[in-house]
Image: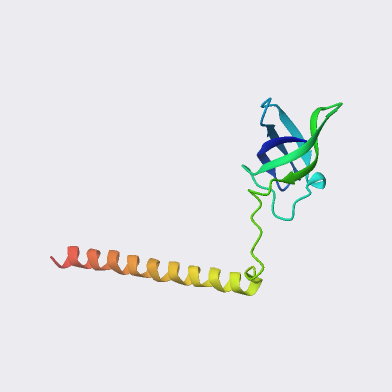
Length: 116
């Protein structure tokens, strides 16, 4: 099996390219060839079966290498959707407070300038 790094991947279109470690050649791959559990992302080290198609070099059976595959440990649960939404809401609330403080500062400076 050949090895390489995912050079780019377009999740909207469902395909990407892998740069072969030895030759540097780009291999096209479709998301249907992904054999990993995690997300497909740029920079991920993978192994794959290389084949020549009528459109050029193509990768099949794309598998992330174990060292780069980051699976959560058995005692760690991934964050639930509710937890992620709560975290996002908290971040938005913090942003609103900071914006309000900045606006208050600008108003205070404007008032000070007109009073003096």
